[in-house]
Image (cartoon, rainbow, N blue to C red; front, side, top):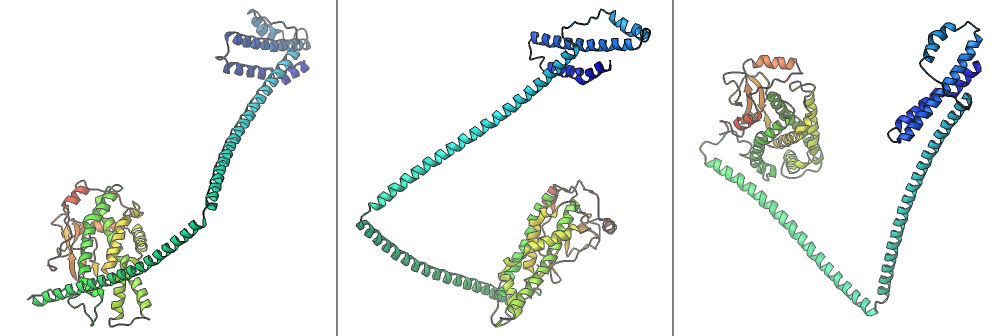
Length: 490
């Protein structure tokens, strides 16, 4: 009995039966009716063979137990099952042999399928290689044809060259000499033209110098005729420190007006564009206005530091070679005015962004990447750097949250509390020349502004608390322009 059971275990008939069932299930809808019936009959035969072996084991086991062992089990389980008209199909081949044949058939079928798939894969690879080889062959043929064409063209050109007569060669040499003479003539004309251009540039510089001198003289004439001259225009009433004024002194008045105008445009145009850009990422208008105000203040600080460093380097460079009627300081400033493009504005922009990233008055950590407004910061740095070349230089007024509101330096924004005496926060700084206000700034006044400024400074990270009444469009349509001179200026 043990040997029969061992053979049954080694042959794995149920595994074979499971494989056949899975294969039949996969191909059931593909096979015809006869093929499905054949598969079903095959499975029935295999099941009957397995049951035949089990009955053999049952018989041997019952014989080993004697006449009376296992009687109750046979009565309670086997006889009722046999009573249900179950019959075992007879076979002419022994059960062990049948199972071995089935197992070998399955293994051979699996090997055949594996060999077939491997063969198809190899054939596909060979076909791909054949296609690539054909394509390479076509490419080589095309290159060979092109080479043949080029070879024929070269042969034709060589033949044409060889057929050229001595007269034609002499004619070409004569034309070459004429062309060289024309080239020499054009070179001489070009040199003359360069001299003319240099003279034109010199004359233009002289015209500009004389125009600036004329402007200064006219201003001096107007001031001399005026009964009450302005006391604060000391920077341009006497631009001539010696007998030979510099270009910086002569153009100080025009540069002053131009820089003030640019600072006003920075408020009315670039600030609103940057504010609109920041409002896409920050809902609170107060936070956006604080960011732009601090960006301007930090830009002036960075530009002033860069100007001092640049001026020191220029003074050190020119001190050893300076000669002339004007002083060394005037020469240094004149050089800086002529070479404002040497200012490394990108370094100042990076310094401003780094300072804003750690500024607790905005937010820490920052709520948005300040690289978004780098163009605004760059323009503010350039204006601030150029303002340092004036005499006296222009600077921003000192400001702090919670300070007392001043009508001389600021004007209230449209959404301020007009009876509040303290500044809640600044929208735009005031521009000063010495102690005189050139352009007014803009502030927002609130009651309890001092308490708000203290709570904001004690809590660097704050939550958004946007006011629905203060929108970007309202600010653009109602906010006044700082491009007016103060009463002292007028």
